[in-house]
Length: 139
Image 1 (tube, rainbow, N blue to C red):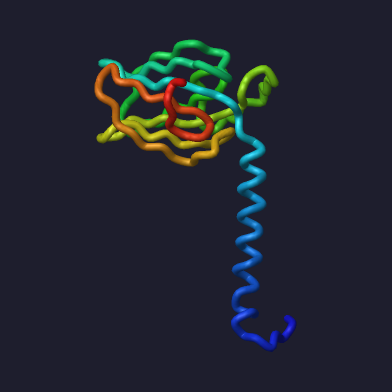
Image 2: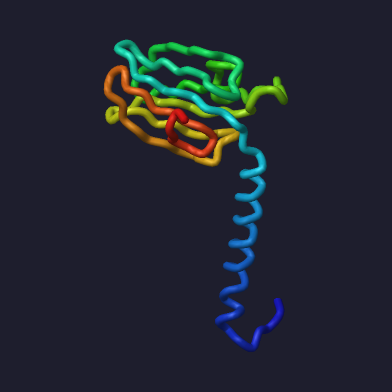
């Protein structure tokens, strides 16, 4: 390793390298975002989702157990460990998991999202719109 005359500079070099690496990874993830919009609604028996943009489906309704994730992608309900090979340029390529928690819902972005985790609560029949950037309005 090269000897630096300034020990502070020597200590900061690895940090600068890591920062640059994380910025490159963040930019790479940003280019992989998919354009989608989904309405999540809490129903008496579970969840109803409405695909507004970027989905092959219009409506999904399902029951969900506490702390049991359900994977959702552009084609509907799927399995968490199976990233779809069926890419379609007419639709978004996203994958997230929705889990019912004691306080509401948790969404974990796996593919095609700028977010890694979203948490929110909903009263029965209340709705929340979600897109590739996070929670949003229906506009």
